[in-house]
Length: 546
Image 1 (cartoon, one colour):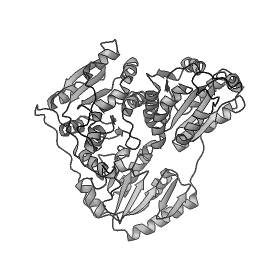
Image 2 (cartoon, rainbow, N blue to C red):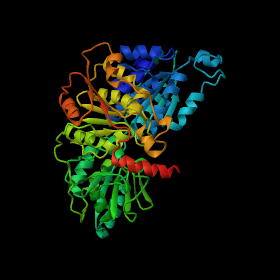
Image 3 (cartoon, helix red, strand yellow):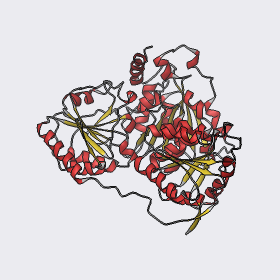
Image 4 (cartoon, one colour):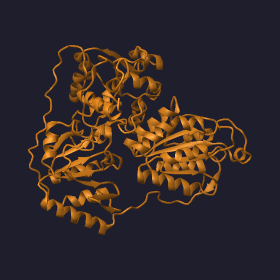
């Protein structure tokens, strides 16, 4: 079978369920973009800039299993590098494709545009080495082999990968040997059995166990397997905010979101009655653990990751997380704590000025099954982390990398990844101003999420850490509710409302009928913040020695 290199790359991406590609055109990628546009099964989603395109590919990858962003050489790819770094930090499978100058230009060492003028055409490739799991520069001899290799690494390892496609090779025809891109990975049974045996021995002397799950469950799409194990074990379970949604939070065993010493009373009670903690797909970060604080420092931590597990200092390699979950269902667990998570009753509006406290109470009772809630770093994310999510819902944020403005671009990706799910974005005014252009792309593609902009006059999260009255924590005030009108000529594609009271917010959310984008400008006091963020601000202040 013969196929052009560009079309084979598209063909290979289809095998990983990629249906949309994000990016910005540039003269080194135009031939490849022709092939994308001519493809029957993949849609080109043009973005306003490359950074937003990388954010969108990240959001898409979290829901779909793989995202793709295409840019040109040099300025285009460096504009996207921050987004790719975030995907690397938070283990999101994203394919970064770069249109590279032709072999003729490179071999003759021409000082062409989009370069540094020093004839070094590999310098940007080298920059991406530290933030991608695999890299390649395609040529006529290696094209199929290298495309298959890097896409497989992206899928298996859940990391971004980097592909340079020379501008004169996209239309070059090569011979294709049909194969299966997916690696067949199986657990080492001896290692798996040894892990289960030693865990069983620990359980015999353990007085109480609990589960702490995190984002790796989402990346490997093992939510069903995790929740089946929880129902079998019947022990308390919690998540870090980065993995919020991987556990069915309506489960009678769910005890809330873990946040170190700032966790709720029930989590603290369970922690103090637990001597063995199953950390499933979990990674501790300062922002998700209140500065790495532990409630009970004497707990024995059992680590279970996608391809290895750990008891004390012994690592059990080459065992799959899904196999460990299945085998652990055969073990006997116990816990002495009575589990009873209190959930606020139905919120009754008082028609008073909206506050952070009321905002998240209203969200708690407005979310529906299967919703995707995106919450920007700061007041939005840390307030949303305390919400009890409905079944099959997911919280999307970026608490490790923490690039402000990320969630607006990510919203484009998460919504396109599954248009049947309601997407709700909560973003602060300061973050919005970084990436606001992508509202234009969302409207252009007739997407219908709910966007809530918290207008509280500046960088509240930074004010809580340091400099509450400093000018650097202030921003220029915009009339946010007019943004959809400014960024799109069609007046029938959105509804924009000004929200100042709790009742107005409840009524606005109730009015959503999924026929158009709902844009809400929420007016809140600049000094108001979720309690947990106020406390975290003081911890970060101390951590930074301010």
